[in-house]
Image (cartoon, rainbow, N blue to C red; front, side):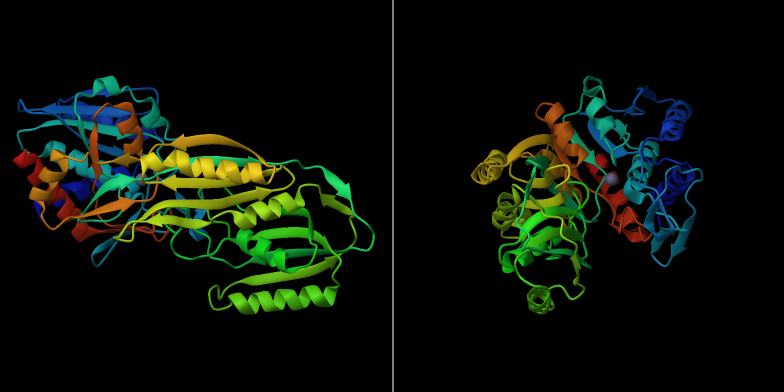
Length: 453
Ligand SMILES: [Zn+2]
């Protein structure tokens, strides 16, 4: 391990000792301001806990290096901890760094540490080091930072997961909310009533895991209902936020079929799907008559049937470019959450238009709640070329998630941007780990890039 890498890891250790889950970032802001003061570097800070540190020792074009200061702090059994009181204890095993019983916070503490070590390095440079707050929750930092304090037009973000790679695009993310009438209607008394819970799927992140064929519990359960003659929904519940693939759904419904028929249909359905989803479980229970069916039951089920779940478009390198996730459904609130991702800016409105048409077709309302912008490295990018000449082995990749670079590119005109980082596995969980060889590779790569610049 060379001196630069040792320095990076030393800074990482100091950062790990500071509680810094999203929203609790005063400690990190103080630490960074202290660093700037001790090193006699000009800095800027704001009330959102953002910090910018400037180092200019050469009259050259500024380079923006950026990382976020907060972390997702989870403890045993991957529980989200309401308030992080202690720092993270580091454990080294072979070529990997872990935390003892918590998430590690290499996402994105290692980005912060890399920048601090590079600011220490004796290279003629013009660096604008940007440290943003609350990336993991509200992205408040990047949305509010005063970008007029930055002169650079090239930004290297250090918030990635794969080393020896240059991320050249990320996806936008749109929260699309379908809304429907929750009114009920009385059904005849010859209906039988059932509650079915479909569970055991793997769920996951709607960006990282959308192409892993993990199934979507809402799609599967509505597919099952299509097999049950004249099923009418009373309720349908399941899923969480827009970016989570649902693993469990529950429906209460009426049908004129008897218990035996429903059981047979359910068993056949499990058999048909056993190979694709070996952990799939379905609980069926005959319940007392409620006699109330959702007026829009048919509309909802048909909408889900025709909704194109999962990957809609890939490029020839197998990167996902467009996808849709059906997330939370709640017939009591009258809402269906859909998360739409696109790495192709020109396609965004087209996908949303298709969704709107599908809603109209089935007499459902909709609204677009929020959109986070994606980014793309400029077509003729000297930033990309310079990073490639500093490391010819680095491959170009695309990420199918929303990142801060997208917001920076939206807020700073003509900004060129990429993401590079060491290898981090299982971020946001207690299995999170950081590959130490990849830290060395990334540190050397950035040092060489800055030297060539
Ligand atoms: Zn991150």
